[in-house]
Image (cartoon, rainbow, N blue to C red; front, side, top):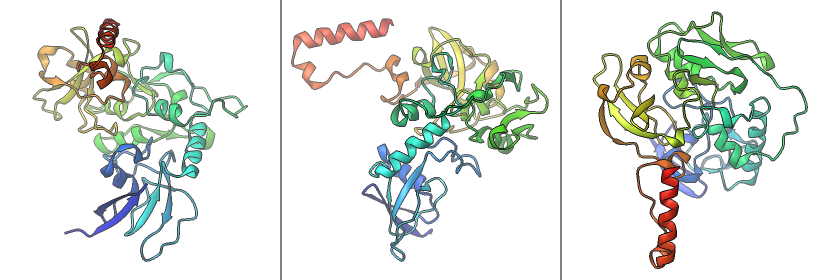
Length: 334
């Protein structure tokens, strides 16, 4: 039986296994105290420690050594110790640092959300909304790259990339013979291949799912629709290559996209093969399980199946009930 240690995060205590990171301990608690993570991925070995969005303040190191850590630490890379106390959203220092990290990530990342297929699912978009500054202090020319195809159905828009390395780890750990990676150093670093369209293994499409921004996109879905106008359902099939458990994204009766299922932290539950992702886009190919449960905080939920639950004040007013009904019917039509 593994040793248990107690850690307190924003005043909430929890017992976890020794060696658990602060980030994973916060995820066990859940809610708003979970630090954001742009590069860490629990399914990928070696991920984390690059984007610095998960910085937290350790106000008490442990029971044996209660001294606070002198600097903010990356919660995805720092293991908890017995008696540790951590501040995340309750620390003004952490909030200010996170604002600076977001500003750094947006130095080269273009704000082209209106034309980006990742809009509505973009973690950087959420961070920019919550912690972004009104204007950037960066006065130099931004890095720009031409869009290239790194696979038959994958397009790389390096201008949007934040160098989180997720796609590199994914290709390295779930496929045979990785052929893309980080070329160059410093401000010349970029994700690329030596030969265009070289990424052609059976699980290459998973790099699209793990990308937190719109740098890697599905060419079969590009510019087809906005995710909040689609309706995702859980489905599965008997696939000889993978688990066959996916999300089908419907627009009307047409399946316009197939993705792996993701958990509440935006991480893939089980990686899927390219046959399921790109070739099986008919309802007859799948066994439909039912509507995908979408968090009410997600913009995708605005066009979901579940009826809106009106606040209690509406239930006592006939006028408000009618107005609420009209508004709901209008949003459904849109």
